Image 1 (cartoon, one colour):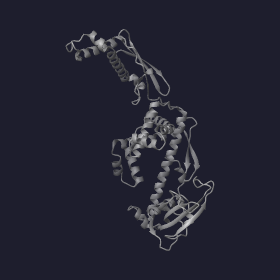
Image 2: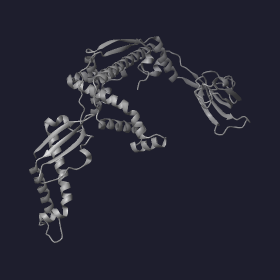
Image 3: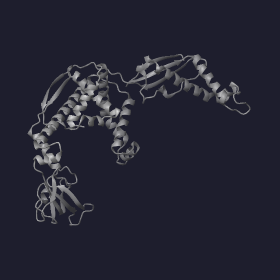
Image 4: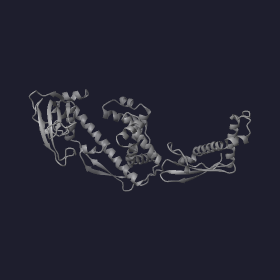
Length: 456
């Protein structure tokens, strides 16, 4: 088929492709369709395969021409996109070409057939500007404070909870079970306020009326009426500036006993620890690894944000929409439901899928631009990963997780999982090269815990 084409670039990585099919190919295509109809159609008064062309045209002319037109457009587009020179203008898989103006072109056997389609293509990505990019590396030291916090968390996880003696009173830090109800001015129970078997830790404030200090000193099965006035600035609008009367009965008092920090605790945590010192060394190593990973993440985020700002990428609308739909499906998986059922759930809560997708747009576009820039730089710099580098990464993961390299390999034996590891290595190698092209300086000092604020 003889086809000529003309490309016009549009906004947001879209193009208009205008194609012209030679008249002889239009006629040939029409004749092939007529022949196919003539062989298969049955019309009263004529034998199968013997219907005159004029009769066919009279009876099926409009629909026949529409079919031929659609076939010619499809065939010509397939031919164009199969050409190597058309590689850069091929449509995205989720952005099928649509007729410009959504109107079919006129079909004639007396002239060439010209039509135009509009569609999205892969965006052009050029990363040229590295000027004035500065990546600041947070300065974080891990010391006794961080180690002790981790040890305290381990003690909390291994704590033993026991009932206090019958005559022992509630103290700060105790775990209590209470029944409570709000009373109105006449002393009657306020509708819907009664709650039985409510459990919380005294001192956390994790109860509606914040009556931690008021129940200190109470004993099991003791009841008490509490009158409490709340500050105007209280975060709970239902309490702010109001005085509440609450009736409380203590049903149970338990105490959490932390285990001693000793070799026995270390051995309870894992068989691989023989002494408390072994546990401490492992914790310190894990904290250091977590710190380094987070700093590397923050550095790469900063670098990519600056690269995106300096090297704009026009995102196709369909690419953004596909990303949003992908996120929607992932969200449905997290809720263990279908995308359709998730939409019903969201609608019943007073929101809408469209509103949520709109809220996600900025983050999705930022992620897509970053991903495109990273992929382009990896291609441009011909970054590859050797089998030895992959093995080394498995060893590193094994050391950090405290398991064998074979166990790690088993976890990543699926092709996609292994590809994920390879992509991670490629990105690390890319960042190492990019940091040589930009300024990397010491950032501000910060606490270890502050490193993970706003982390996703």
